[in-house]
Image 1 (cartoon, rainbow, N blue to C red):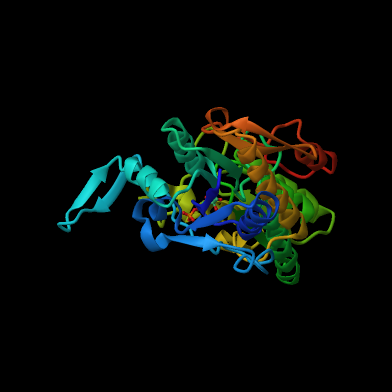
Image 2: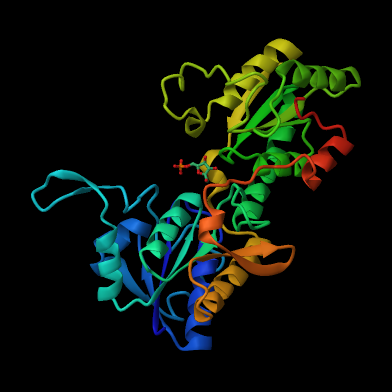
Length: 363
Ligand code: F6P
């Protein structure tokens, strides 16, 4: 192996630059490899040309603290099922993965490090099946990838959500209001439960535990009876009420994917105002959770993941994703990892801690 490629695809996530830096530094300094950055994820792999840029010690210097990705990203681009405009300006649709493989060959890239979440790694797996030497690095603020304890970006997202909750607390208290904070996480409640614990919230509603809104209102009323005149409720964007889907507000009713529009916080807020008898406001934190500088923990984890990805590559362990088990770095096959999103378990230390302090989980 002489030259390797690295790319970031899917939603951005604090720590991506730290991984790119660690891959580059390890590859160049320890193994004397050349490193090529592929811009805009799989779209760049398809386009080739200027999308492929050399990475060296100089252009990765000082990026460890930067959010986003110096290689940019593109979301949901799947070269095995791709929409593109052909030479005649006509929109076409189909499998263009061969173009990606050809572009790697043309650039003399012997192996590829793909930094991404489930969708990105699924494509990584598909390229591995076509014979490309792929190593995956697990990225998502949602922390829902299988086989690894933690993904980088999660710690930063929780820190950002917690800081926001601290700010919302002072305004909630001043106005004797309920504030419902909707956080990201897609179909998992890791960000919600962790930030609710760290933010000292009254309730956390997560997809893994269907909630009864009356129980949440009761918990708030109980706290009022002992003199607490405000409440902070964290709602994961994927949370669901007992017995089914939330009746989304009219803003999101026609959306094919209401979660992405962030509707549930508003609904829960309206319901709690009525049932708990306190004025209520909803705050949707949204993409603020993905932006900005990674925490120290995420910088360290990203550095470890990036270096270890190069080690796996040099050992010929292709088709695998880097994993973290306890404090130990290891790997698991992409075949095994993808399509099995992890959920917050009842036995997890988060749920145990929440139950121990009687935080309302809506059940
Ligand atoms: O997977 C990361 C994530 O931020 C989710 O928490 C969220 O549901 C989704 O991506 C938002 O995606 P987009 O960037 O397409 O709005």
